[in-house]
Amino acid sequence: MRGGNGQGGWIYGRNLGKLSGMKTLSQQNFLKTLPEVMIPHLPPHLQKIQVHQPWHWLLQFHFGETRLHYELSRVARREAWEIGFHFESGDKQLNRFLLVGFRQHLFEIKDTLGESFEAEMWDKGWTKIYEVIPAEGYTIVHQAQIGRRLAEVITCLHPIFVELRSLAASVKR
Image (cartoon, rainbow, N blue to C red):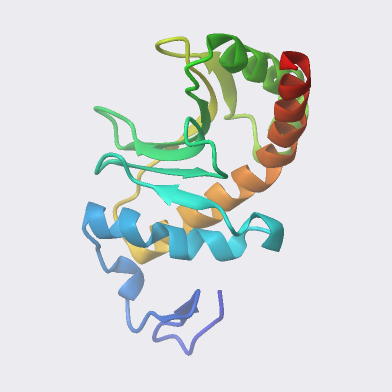
């Protein structure tokens, strides 16, 4: 973020103007424009991440395997967001393998990202590693905070995923 003169400033190339951090976006625009806020915070080798929005309340980010994706979604009946890495492959063994692998790295993940991260079984044989954070409205400032956090999560978790995915592929051969 670049500073301003007390009458706003710049966030990610956007001129905020006076009190524009309080500017409220619709949920649709908040999510639709979040990738352009988040992606520049990724290391260059991860900036080719693909974006998918299957429903209006969530965004998914992946590197070609759509069922193994990072996700930002609203938490039902709470003023909160879930930021996570979801393993929703049709292969339940792969989902469990990834969960077990991430659990083996959970101490270092929590050391980097904070104690709020959990890794657990979910629905339909799916698994995930995630955190829940408070939703603070659909402002540009909150969007920037979520974009930075999502980039931190992807940057931390992706090397572990690449290693585990490679091990899983070699076992299947």
